[in-house]
Image (cartoon, rainbow, N blue to C red; front, side):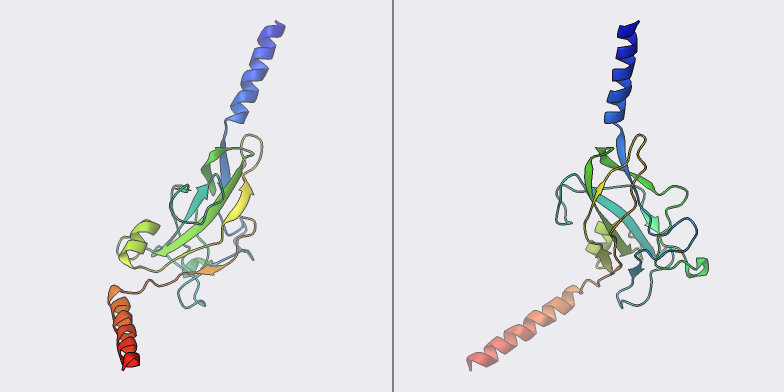
Length: 188
């Protein structure tokens, strides 16, 4: 009987150790008001609003620079509340803000929020970036993932950020031509 109880206890403990870690992907509290971080459009003053803008949580098991390589994305992406909701600048995660990250509960996880202009059907950050849509990202946050009996942590330390426009290739080409002209003029 003691062996059976010990086996059951060890099995329960091992299941807890392999529980998927989670993080709350939310920048607004449950009462609809918050002093948390908001996301601004390119001008730095207009808060993002509506389904034309999306946000998503990226994570890594070790600290990373916020680019590909060691990072993964959680699903699904979240649209922003509309101005009519009175919560512009905040994303709408729906019924549950908990997002599963690929580390065990209680393990360290590094997360980053990425937001983008989803116009033209760009439903991912990468597609928006490739299309030249405005994109932005938060600083990388170090958290301890929740799991098992531990509640998922909030995005503690998240600060407001804004989208940045990606210059058109023609703008870059004109800049290079101007720089070349200045160099030629300097030689004379």
